[in-house]
Structures are given as C-alpha cells and as structure tokens.
Image (cartoon, rainbow over all chains, first blue to last red; front, top):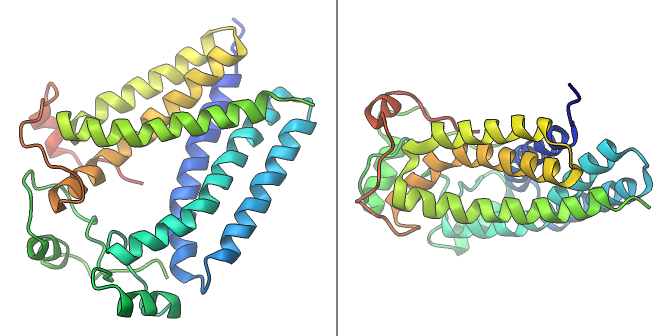
Length: 145
Length: 110
C-alpha cells in the first residue's frame, strides 16, 4: 500500500511549529531586554523558510518549511502579544529582567506569579483565591529565566 | 517556483487560528475533560491523512489533526483562565462519557 506522507509532514510541522513557538516566545520574551530584537530575528527566519519553500522542488520539504515559516512569522508578532500578557498579569513577569521590572512597576495587574500553573477547581475563583491556588502547598514559583 | 508550501503555510495559520476559537468555545460549553476524545480525533485524522491520495486533502487533514492534538493539551489551561475570569465561565458543561475516570488522570499540558 502506498502511503501519502504529505499529511504526516504537515501534521508534524504544525505541531512542532506551535510547540516551539509556544515555549520559545515565553522563554525569550522573559529574558530578552528588548522585544524588537527577537521579533526581527524570528521574522527573518520566517521569511527565509518561505523563500526556501518556494525554491525547493521537493514537495515534502516545501510543505514543512512553508508551515514552519508562517508559524515563525506569527511568533514574531507574539513577542508583542506576550509583553501585553505580562502587563495584564496573564503571564508571569521576570523581575530580574529590567524591562519586566519596569512593567511590574508601571502596571498594577502585572505579577511574577503564573496563575495558570494549577489544575481546574470547577468553579469561578476570586482574584485572591486565584493567587492562593498557585501559592499554597505548591512548589516554589519558577520563572523562565 | 513551488507554491504548495507557501499556500499551505497560510492555510495552516488559519487552521491554528481556528484552534483559538474552538479551544475557548469548546472549553466553555463542554469542559476540558473532553481532552482524550479531542486528542484521539486528531490522531485519527493524521492516520487518515496517510491513506488519502490527494496532496491538499492529505495536508489539510494532517494540519487539522495536529491542531486538534495541540488544542487537547490547551483545554486544561483554558479551564483555569475561565475560572480566574479572563474568559466567561459556564457552570453547566456537557461532560464527556467517563468524565469521572478522565478527571482522575492528569490532563496533559505542554
């Protein structure tokens, strides 16, 4: 039986691209003194991948780089979105990063706590309970630094 | 010039974008305990993508399958976001079969 590997390559590229972006954007945004530098680097790699995808005659390589390139271009924008999450306290700030230290000072909702690092409890929680749920009987809070 | 990768890349971006929508809505109305069914459906779609002959059909099945598998790992975190109040919380969820058993297992998160 002949198997069609285009879908598998598309699936692996999509999953790997999303996973890499998910982890890399958080970690890099957390430690980078600026967000424009990683934005430019990711955009350049994304464009290079798209150029490669257009110029190769290998369909599987074209599919993989075409998908990975666009997820990298999306990640470039995510650095700004991630910084906005830090301002709102939706993602943990890294106090040892001077840029994040400024965000912590200027935005009342910014926090070093990762409020999502817990299991669901099945009911709405107050802001105080949201903090208790990630600080009580849990491991020390760790930042991506 | 080989446009398959570029056009598929743009399409995959839309598939991933749709992932944001169904993870948010799906968690609100059905709850995160559906994750094993969502993950299973994703794996099934990737397997089917190997068996179809068309390039685009196979690619789209693969990309959508992968986004289902990823979304399954995002449902738990989305449930916490709704509990905190970052998204509307709905208490009357339509639970999946074997919800009690699924609840005892640790939901995956990457």
